[in-house]
Image 1 (cartoon, rainbow over the protein chains, first blue to last red):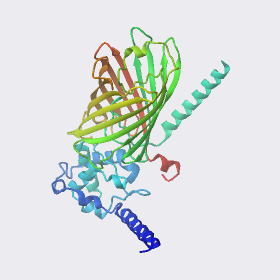
Image 2 (tube, one colour):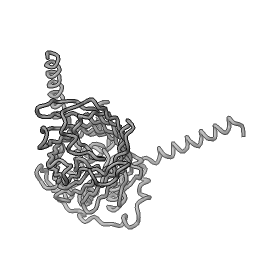
Image 3 (cartoon, helix red, strand yellow):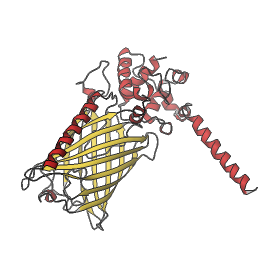
Image 4 (tube, rainbow over the protein chains, first blue to last red):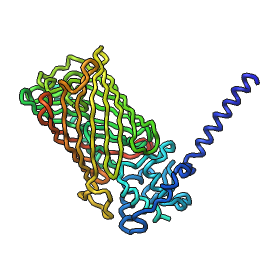
Length: 128
Length: 293
């Protein structure tokens, strides 16, 4: 293989890797990382109206700057009225809030107590 | 004299404009500080800019009362990288008010995701002088004697500071531990220190209604910090140690106000230090500047 071809191969590999990384942003790749035990967890506040109201308040305080007041997304941040959120279990959403998806710009919200993260999950599920 | 008067007048105008800007800037996020000395594992959200003041008032019996200040600008570069600039100043009764230097620091979170204990690496360069009284950390053999001399800016302190920050969240409690190593670049030995903090919101669940004075907006805790000597005399001998309860009030979509009375635990420490601060966070700062928000 000539030196030129070797460089082309390396460039192609790098380009492919870049596209793969870019494609993984916002594609829900985080869901594959959720442990089964976490995935199966149930929301202690499931469908409670107070929890949904509290979750909406917490969402506006902590999440709306990226995802918009109505969770419809902003410039580069996803709309949460989506099949991905609709099809996610409460446990998966709670895991995402706790761990974030830091490579994709979603921070960990572990600084919020677990109860408040569940309240946000209640709100997100109420959007569907 | 006239020059000082013009400078003072300009500073007042800048401060007034800054305050007006802060009051009318539509911020939403709330700042996160629970402690004054201890760092937690929590990073600034990417794109957010936080303004904060950290002040400490001391009343040494054998010296003049002082007020040390640090003005802080903190920016979330990435989810795993936070950058900060501090501007330090101080006022000492019967002496003078001084700008004492700056600090530039970066924090990196090497492990993405939440673990039972979360490490953060901290690196700081500081260029301050010997009159600095911000007391943002205590290392080596720092003690009350450093505060008894009259304000003296003659000694430059160009230092690097490294910290290993460990933090955990468990059932609403935050537990953070900092291990500090600091080196004055002027051929002085490495100095060591520590800070540990524990805090918890007064209520773990949020109330459904908008409220300002509800318990979820208050965080209470305590921190302990002090020096651990230096490379040649490691340990607690001839160091200062403090224990300080902390209380923070997070005003929803507004500033966070925090206060912490600190108590010296040995004769080398200040008997009492009163820390207080205000922080204010502007979300998606750069996007707003670009007019995309």
